Amino acid sequence: MKNAMFLFAPFDLLSGGCATMFTADAQHANIVQEKSDFERSLSYWPGEYENRVQVAQQIATDHPEKDRNNPLRVFISKVDLPAFGEHVYYVEW
Image 1: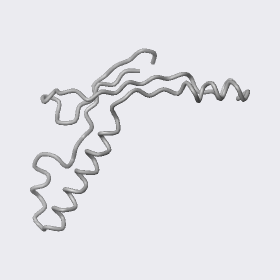
Image 2 (image 1 turned 90 degrees about the vertical axis):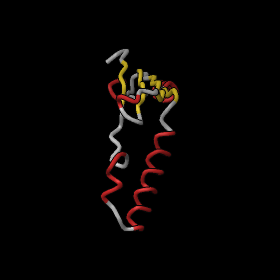
Image 3 (image 1 turned 180 degrees about the vertical axis):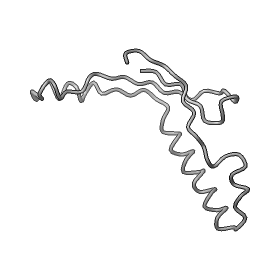
Image 4 (image 1 turned 120 degrees about the horizontal axis):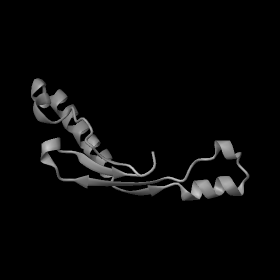
């Protein structure tokens, strides 16, 4: 797919009423930690990514053409669209 864009909303099992199913303090602490880990991992996504250096290295080292990666550029940005959920991202490549 050449130039494509879409909205991506990862499914967040930890938000909403799910946490209310757990009553024990240890289970609640585990849910809080998992949500924290999930949100921290989402914070790494926004940005612009490309593999130009990898493609150049493959060309320079005479990597077989059929096995070379195609150049790729990806742009990811968090967007505020409450109708789609708390974690919504715009992705373009």
